[in-house]
Amino acid sequence: MAGSSAIDQNTCEHREIGVRRWTEKRRARNDAAKIIRQAMVEKAAACELCGCSPLRPNRRLPIGMSQLCVHEIANGPLRSRAQDKPYATLVVCWACNGELNNKGQDHWPESRQLAVLAMVRPDDFDLKSYNELVNPRAPRRITLFEVFEEMVEAKDRTGTARLFTPDDVAHVMNVNRKTVRRWIDGKQLRAIDVAPPGATKRHFRIEPADLRAFAKCRESMSEDDFEQLVGEVQENWQ
Ligand SMILES: [Zn+2]
Image (tube, rainbow, N blue to C red; front, side, top):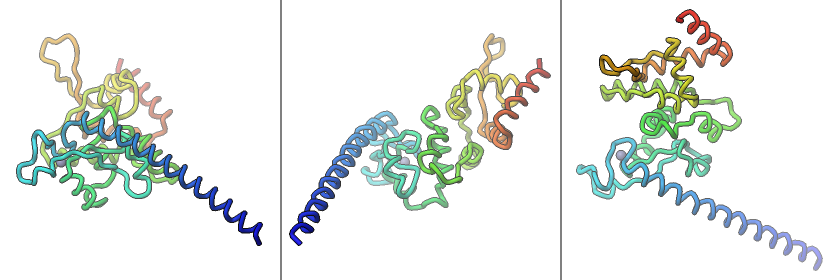
């Protein structure tokens, strides 16, 4: 009997050491995430949803509600993995954070939050990484089309569109800027030339609705078929 109690004690000790190590690891990860989150808040400087900040507070609310924090777009158990990932978070004021958390998925589905991210921080938008982070195995994937659809709806609500530069589109669609230019030249992606008359260089801007139409065509085709189509259209165009 004495022997078995010694084993028990050993197992317990091992378990305790294991738990301690795990807790230390978690604490270290949380501390590292805290620094990254603080840097994200400082970089954003204003709420990515309503534009308020401690320097430009929303006067209709108590002053503390304009403090900024990092909100994880993903819900549930994967939240802690998302906490220091710029592609899976929004910097928002406390008031907006409350709205995002309380109104839930019906009002603020992930695709709508990702649309905000794509509009305010196209450099950080990375749908592939987001899908891998929140849903590594399951087939449920948020598509670019869904995100662009939310952008168009956001425009309908506010009446103003955030027009994209080819660089923005390159970031958002995770491609080279030359590829975007090829899509525009090949008439695959509709773009408006906003250069003043007589300018030698063309300056393109892209509407969210045109991005949506483009994504729909692209996502319904395989990558190879799509590239072939771009090639064919370009050949006929020249
Ligand atoms: Zn806000």
